Length: 209
Image (tube, rainbow, N blue to C red; front, top):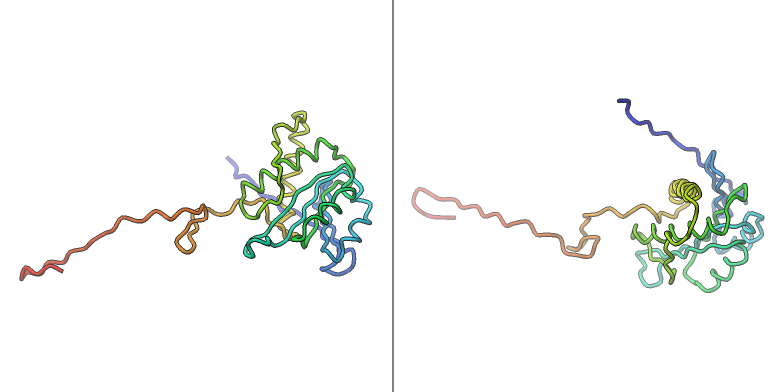
């Protein structure tokens, strides 16, 4: 049996302002998704982009105010991202990076983005890398999409899993298990102690050590 082949992907990062600290548009060759990345200082320019007036999902990402060693993220969706992301950002002081995900062909519907939002929240929660700022946890199974649409959205998520770490949002990859820090494992439980092994040395004189 022939071994399965792994193919590389081409990710394009377009620096809109000709600087890595400005507005960035990320895309994968052959994928219709479009990912726009801004900081607080370029947020106004983000809102002015025509892509942000489309149906899509968005992330607000930054350090967790309650734990400086962790990050926090809010996930949202909208028929027009521009109509909601500003309000969401104004209610959250923690965020430093805003990310908008739409498509170049405007193929996403309200049903699609509601499904994507629910699946992303589920995946982020299961990965355990960041703190979720969402108070509602929608169930993806209740997002009633036709089977073909669900399959297409899972393929969309697969591409998103590739591109998000490239732009600095490592949200979806599960944390490694079994890592121990300060005597506590990732799961928060003490590691299982190994059974104690004793050695006894006997001298011919009868003395035991």
